[in-house]
Length: 427
Ligand code: GDP
Ligand code: IMO
Ligand code: MG
Image (cartoon, rainbow, N blue to C red):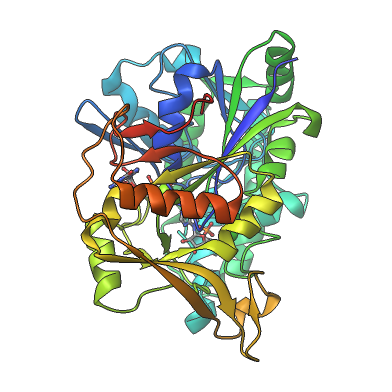
């Protein structure tokens, strides 16, 4: 039987998942999102077009590829409608190529309001949420009172909606948020009506039948492993399992059907939102990295925090995901630095040197132990087949040795074509 390959971020999100899913999609019959929701912003660039997807899988621009929004996703119909409308100019057969699990959880307008209210109440300790209603909608799912996509087909959907919304509005009375509820409801029901026209499916059957038929399937992760609800820097995390195991629960795929696990990482590190970030550069170097890498959130536009690559964090992510292949993104951004640093270990508060990610990461200041590398100092305009500057090869080989997983792909720019396949093995 065929396998499901998984592609996921090893850092704090925004590693370049959208670009690579789009690059790899021609190899796959199916691309499926398994968790997260409109908090994600996955950017694709080709033929001079730049597009940001939030809930729709990044295989959507490939004619032959079926795209599935799996049961593990939280779906906002209002954002879905906007996304579909912004795709209308691309001549994509969405009715034929897009499938949505009836078991995906719905984000309703009051989830967004609750997200806003809870974040504001946290003050200094705010998570830095994208405010898309992710936490509150997963809360309702786990609390067994959520609404699901399949519910929109039932006769009493309005009653179910009102019941859930009333429970939210009662909570919101205790918070200083203002909103126009009738307007939000109108927008929501209009979007729900729009959603009803799509292929709403039992996606777990669909995926398993595809597997039996020998189809190739790519599971597309959102966020990053260090934002995972269990293994990320809790509480500064998102509300889903972003790791490989999430592909099993978020799609209905048995662990034995998982094939390659592609771990994607930037040649440096970024984080948007609050929480620990040991290699963060709070100086002019960090500013330059942000500018050169255009590190501003794809969903919120917020500036991303920037820093050097963090090997202990990557080792941790590789361990919990069982990564089989590594993909290094945005190597071009480091061209501006004559010297490049790699955090190889951490020094803890008590002086201990370790390459483990300690529980105390969230509370204590942890000092990175750096090893320095000579930069390549030339712009990377390389394309597939070109050889890379020797200093960049040294950098890649060092990281590969430290992580003990082959780096099969290096990305040197946002465009589809700015992708270098490094190994004989297929990516
Ligand atoms: P995702 O959430 O993992 O899909 O990543 P985002 O789309 O949020 O952020 C990645 C950003 O980097 C996007 O603006 C991409 O267009 C851009 N990008 C992807 N790969 C490269 C690369 O190799 N070099 C540069 N300079 N930009 C890249
Ligand atoms: P993609 O898929 C980067 C971050 C937020 C915040 C925390 C919780 O584009 O890589 P949430 O809205 O989930 O309650 O926010 O997680 N975050 C992301 N950071 N990329 C993302 O997605 C993110 N999705 C959420 O900034 O710190
Ligand atoms: Mg993103």
